[in-house]
Image 1: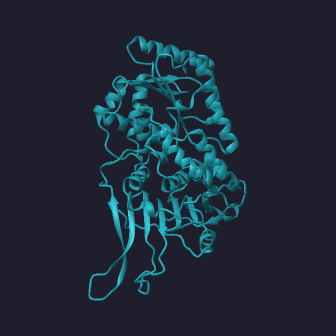
Image 2: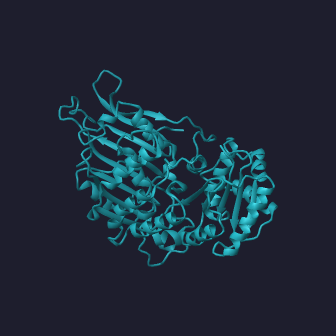
Image 3: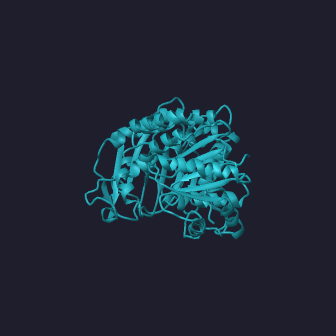
Length: 482
């Protein structure tokens, strides 16, 4: 791969500290950074070369639940040798003149600045200034190399604003230059769903309305909003994760086989599912955990949701009539993310008269923790009696508490952007389609129901699924133990 310069706007922000800098370290540790690649961090505060090095070292040694493995000094030194810093205000046109000169000077010193990745770890209200000034200074041109742009979700706050932001992006860049990052698409276990489904012919014929009773998806966290009060209070859980992460999980679990494993083919099939999702505003429950309003930067009268549960269906021939129940939130009983495909019980099941004989087979995609793919089955208990017990057939990732067997999502997606592979990034249509589904739910303005911390959310969420004669599956602790 060709070397390039990675320019991170907002290098001292929370996102850079928690996600980007650790991911860059991991890419370097695995020898995946092309030689002579340079990193330029940009922020408002002044820092000299030693101070930016000290900052990187400090960040990598902070306690970070996403990045727990040891830091090697030789890898740090490699990063230091290619690390630069430039201070300035992103709405100031003069800063971009300074940035252009800085890049020209690096080029004279033999650094390849023809290929560029701009990573916007900033607030979206700065995008327009950044794009306009990069264009005015000629820094977005691809005359002698490639230019790519990485931006984070959320892409807009509703369909209208997402459409406007996508148009703003396309005013300055072509679609093949834009990498819209939803880190769930970079999760190893989510990507493995495609391999599991389309490399094995055993289960795929069963993934249809003829065999599936219903689908459940959960993304639960046992912790609260932390220091994100200002952001979270303006967005809420439904828009923060329901609009993107959980819809992507559903798309991976239900999409048709792509014609080939390519960006266009895979994204096309994800989009086809999202376009056929039916919003049912009456089947929505919103909640807020106790003591949320006492958190920093949260409105004392906040109506923000920290929990949601809703029912939907896919309006296509394959899944028509199969109910889908989706829930997520904070301060819940466990931190767990999984998809459960619950199969129908045939009327002529032989042992249905026995204890556990009516329990359904369930295919689980456990995204986190204890990652794996698990099939719940019924087996005979050892002994002279004919007795049944539920058990699990499991594919588990081989891991220990000390290793990191698969890439962090940010590591994978940054590396994909380096390669120019957009397969696991969102395109404009995909983002707008997600918002098209969520908007009718978000516009309900239902007051959130207060729920106890450490519970599974408000009781009204139980009633949502129980009204159909079903119940929520409590995530098992028996999957893939470390």
